[in-house]
Image (cartoon, rainbow, N blue to C red; front, side, top):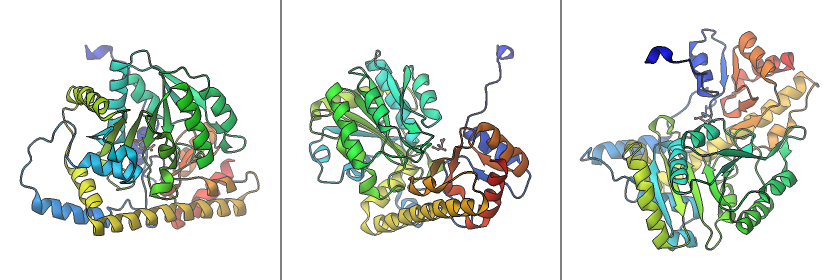
Amino acid sequence: MFEQLQPAPPDAILGLTEAFRKDARPEKINLTVGVYKDASGQTPILRCVKEAEKRLLESESSKSYLGIDGIPEYGRLVRELLWGPQHEIVTSSRAVTLQTPGGTGALRVAGDFLHKLFPSAKIWCSQPTWANHPGVFKAAGLTVETYPYFDPERNSLKFDALIEALQQIPAGDVICLHACCHNPTGVDPTPEQWKQIADVVQERGILPLVDFAYQGFGVGFDEDAAGLRELSRPGMELIVASSFSKNFGLYCERVGALTVVAASAETAQTALSQLKICVRTNYSNPPYHGGGIVATVLQDAELRSTWEQEVATMRDRINGMRKLFADTMAQKTSARDFSFIKNQHGMFSQSGLTPEQVDRLREDYAIYIVRNGRINVAGMTEDNMERLCDAIASVL
Ligand code: LMR
């Protein structure tokens, strides 16, 4: 049977990481996958995570299965992080949360749930979006459409076109929105623009699916949730896929959450019963370790404060690299103005480099960038900046 198989293309992002690992050139630079690096180019384990792991190791008494929805207190902790403890969604019990294997796991469960229970609903993704969004949703059986988002001429949000497109989306369809630190562009709506987006979404009866993979990496934990909270109006339904890969540095532990907000607590429980079937028939129940770490940190005042400081340090370093990159590029070339990179949020920037320029950077300089021109700013360091900017200047 297997002899009939045709080879599949490598993954647009992780395929490049594989190629990077095999590259023997010592000066190589990896700006592909969204992984944070510190000033020395390492992806550190956060101090709060190490301490939580120590406590878990001492207190764990069993390796029995978790429930299908994960660690019991996990959902409440995630919802409090998303909305703050006093928000009506948190106090009214009209939201349910499942611990999932990463944000991707949350997106896939959401996709399965939507396709199974709302088979005619299409999902609308921003143009461009994270390279894996269409793949995950299509694998779940959903039809994927796109709405305009990014203006590459101005390196900004195409806000009017976005609103016009939303006004055409049929009621009952789903819109996938990036809560903050838009991947791949780094361009987010302002709080006022979020309000207008939420107005249209509400008026038209579109279901928002908010992908929240970078809480804390943009401006701050609450500021980054501004769009989500604008969409969380009384009675409004929505879905949130959270990832703790980046803000806890728990990439390989695969820890995230899927939260479904219904109009009432009773409906939320009905949705949970359906979501549990999607999980049970997929991976049965989630792995413990990453969720145990997140729950331990979020519940402990001291660990939580360490975590918040550590996230602020990562955010500040990325913003410092944005500035250093723009300033260094300005010294190297007048062929292109990169100052826009200073105003973007999160790990990524849409650099405007063409696939051919990206290929030359990889082949001639061992610099790896996603072929759509997305740069992981968090992979830049003071040590690799000169070489990176010289190489980019030479391919422009
Ligand atoms: C990315 O966009 O690089 C990250 O979200 C990691 C991934 O799984 O693609």
